[in-house]
Image (cartoon, rainbow, N blue to C red; front, side, top):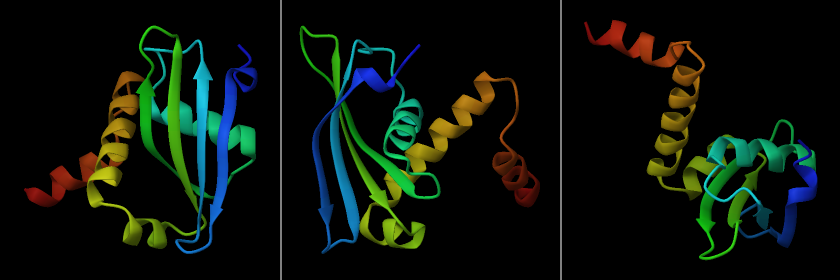
Length: 119
């Protein structure tokens, strides 16, 4: 399935004050089926953002249309991203990564280490 044609960029702005790039786009035909990590992967491939921190801020379904609007922040440095954004944003991303790993049948290694430390 070719995802690149499903992405329509509505806004792509560099924010020099916060040292980040802000991308807003529409995902056509993926309403109700797109997960945040899949959206991040699609954005990374479309804009060639390998090695950069892409943070999904908002994925919103449009009423009556099979379109999802998404907002993403792209940072060069993870430390800077953690300074600017709330810790809950990164907690949700880690939770989604854990759920994705569990769905594939493998236990996330981070959670196993935390359980061993708590004993």
